[in-house]
Length: 282
Length: 324
Image (cartoon, rainbow over all chains, first blue to last red; front, side, top):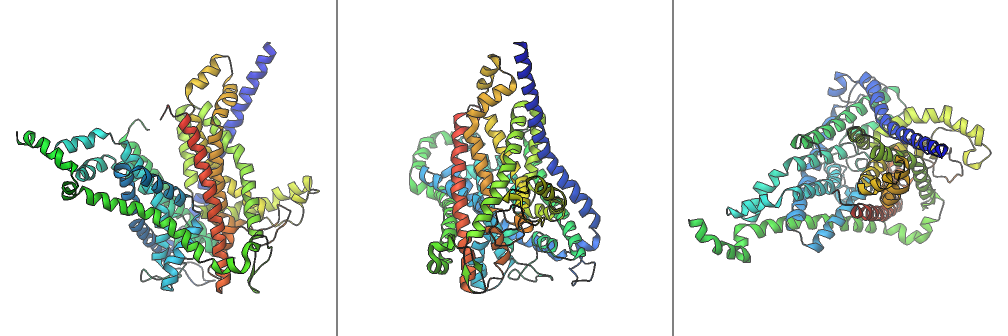
């Protein structure tokens, strides 16, 4: 009897350790990635990397200033196209939607969320690149904007629903119309949550490479307008990493470091923003 | 007071459409409705564009597109089988590696770990999910590929070389390497969703098992996990859908060779990778549209998987929704 008990306790301990190891390995993976990039990328990061244009092949030095600005431009377009649609659709779902329409919109957003990013790239290609006969920042931004919509929409809806109904009723009771109540009371009450959702969606698309390959393409010089091929950090990392030149590979590390820091920073800020509203956490 | 005397009148007003229109309610309703409908419209447009722009290969090759092994841009002959094979093999490999790690980790975080530690580790794992795929590709090229070439592949070949799975020359890049990199990428999805599902199991289930004298592990394995198994399966489907559509990391480590080989150490190709590599170079309508048809195939597969995953997760979390 006690032997059996001992065996059961052994199994318990064994599984405790086994599953613990699984969890620790998953966590260590991130630490390794961070550490390796920090070591390698931080090494090659320099002032000229952030401020200079790429140099011709074989000539060392140069930087990725155009890709950093390009990424910013593409993200700006993504934000301008993605946030309003996601936000207003989220407001509709939380405050106005009927049953059928709500189901359809949610279903569509789930579909959109599951679409592989490269397929979104093809979509933006057929919508913008083909009619205008030019790779452009607009096409890339549109692809990323479409990817942002479902994320922004779902988080907006969730956080609006979490606002107590009494708040809106209070606004209605003092004579506000429904939309003023929503715009001036409900949405501000859920503001932190909505902002978190928007930031997380930005972080998610900031690192996307696949949809940019054939929408914004790449450019070794400054793109002067919005309808020109535009360099971006993720695409630069990809191009430089698979190139045979040592110098380019080093720059890919530096760019990877910058991109990862950017993405993780936005992520942590977004979560911190949410936590500050509720000191107890979730 | 004035407000009091206007009360019933205002209530009557609120019910009439014209009054709500005057207040702006109907206008705002309409505006948000338009944007919400826009989301549906985008999806319809996406499907339509993919379908319309793949008409040439659909007419020329028909169903042969999916069984032909040739991918020959020079003679305009296109078949998708090598890419479908590569996609299936790499995804299956990644699941094989990621499921034990992810589900095991989730069990630890949901059942064994202190809540504070669990929350902290989950936060870190969720950050791992935020790392862009091109970064995984970068590390794949410069860290995983050399390790596979010099250490893992030779060891596998030494012990299992008699199996066709591990025969042939070693390149470092290939199905196995892609599977390993993909596994690291999808573990966070399996882990964090499975943990949520496990936490959604009502506490009385655990308490009942423990009060009958079960050890922590016995309550977990015989009570909690069976209760949550559909949800865990859902998280695996979700991860699978991600693995199938993953582009950059795979493109950088799979070797990009449209061949069907029995060896896992051989280079291959996936649907997403071929689109990424050849789309800008595709000359001629048939070539480009064949790539778009591949995109359509990928889209349909991931839509089906995602749908199934959501149903499964919903089925479990709804059943145990006391907490939420």
